[in-house]
Amino acid sequence: MEVTAQEVAEWMVKEIRSAGTLYQTDAIEYVKTHFGEQFVFVNENGNTSLSKEVKKAFRKLHGGRIAWDRDGFFWAWT
Image (cartoon, rainbow, N blue to C red):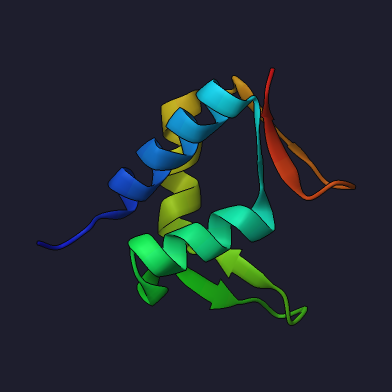
């Protein structure tokens, strides 16, 4: 069955709701292993990141209730 960016985003929101935070490195590893390589890429800075489709679906889903911590490289429930 084909996995969608929406399903990846839903997993992320669920994780953050239950744990309070989600580190980018953990998210990327989980997404690659459980959802597929198509949802991650290496950005212009050489860092592995989640696909734009996942980030867009994620932002829509949480509607501002989750914040990105730039220094700690994690998302947290606000």
